[in-house]
Amino acid sequence: MNLHSGARTFSVTSPVDGSTYVTRGYADGTAIEAALTRARAALPSWRRMPLAERLAILLRFGEEMKARAAPLAEMVAWQIGRPLWQADETPRLALIGQLLSDIAPQTLADVPYPSDETIRRYARPVAGGLHLSICAWNYPTAMLGYLVTSPLAAGNVVIFKHSPQTPLIAEVAEKAFRAAGGPEGVFQSLHLDHADAEHLIASGTFNAVNFIGSVNGGRRVHAAAAGTFTQVHLELGGKDPTYVRADADLDAAIPQIAEGTYSNAGQSCCSVERIYVDQAIHDRFVDALVAETAKWTIGHPIGEKPMVGPVVRASAADTIRDLTERAVRAGARRLMPQDGALKAAGLGAAYVAPEVLVGVDHGMQIMRDELFGPVACIQPVGGDDQAIGLMNDSDFGLSASIWTRDIDRGVALLDEVEAGTVYLNRCDHADLHLPWGGIKNSGLGRTNGRAGLTEATAAKAYHVRSVIG
Image 1 (cartoon, rainbow, N blue to C red):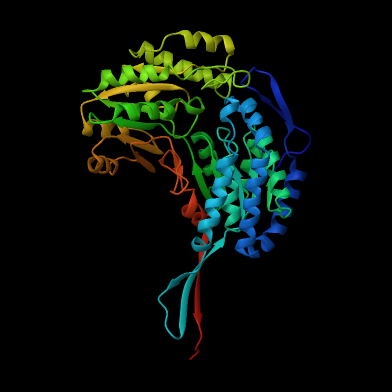
Image 2: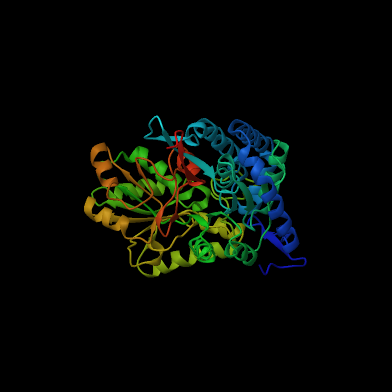
């Protein structure tokens, strides 16, 4: 498989202060092969384990992670820059396990088909086998629910590769799983570099690959799996739009739109990145959003209690600033006072203060490329038809939202929106009860609940003939 050998290290540069937070070693070929051997050995007994026992282990795993909430939150804050007071994701991870335990018995049960006294027909969801799960850095604890808990509940075993920005989360998670009574080899974390991960995928080693990350990363995973018939699930980026109709309740909508734009410093795949507002209320909306944005303070994520900390790295901040400057040169206008920007500059190279831009249009790169930063881009529209056309004028299709008091009309408009998840009078929310995933460049497949469990299995058809002749 042409895997690397010998010692190789990588370091995490903290966006908080530019320091080296931790250094770790990449797994070499020997360590990788040993992990694969353990996983293959563990698969038969884990797959045969009664579902109730598997689920009990996974529930304990969630509780073990909650018991480690404080150090995990500190790791999140230092590794990606989210304010410490917002950095505990363990309740969501545990909740995913609880919801899976509620629905798994029915979702993974035999499905009956038309039968008679001589032939019984049914389909049984069976685990695919060995999964490679690759995690992004932006919700590094919560996303374990999609990438680890769900495939394990279905009876698969998982090799887990976390982002090199957040390696410590993976190490804690593996220890928590073993503390919960998880058998050896069922869930293992490996620090893999991109080349080794691609070689493993291309070799056909895995039955499935689950990836959450960038579009470019997803393309490389998809290309590596080409011809192997490996099941590939991709949850990629977004350029998510929201449309505010003339009849929207602005008092209710604007705080939620601000949160959808600025939370996690805008670093969510479903962050609101394009805001279309009916021209009849455009100016009123803009004034109110500027006032709301002023509440989103920037500061040191450990020493202060700001709403927004740094973005994940200085190079990401440079990209956000560059796209903003290009838009301004093309005619967009910044509306926020420069106090926040001055404070951000004083805090460090990775800090970007929340901003509001008007005068944007689809000829600007900032309205085309995923920004992953705390910038609200507002464009006026003449009505529903123009808004839907602009919402769909994108290479992405993860989520989209509409704000209106006319529920029937709003739902009818959602029918026209090209996205995997659509919201009415809500935004930027991965509902744990609903399937989650995108279309276009936003990915392939679905996670969450029944859909996630179903996609982690294959339907095995049973034709049981009781009378011969």
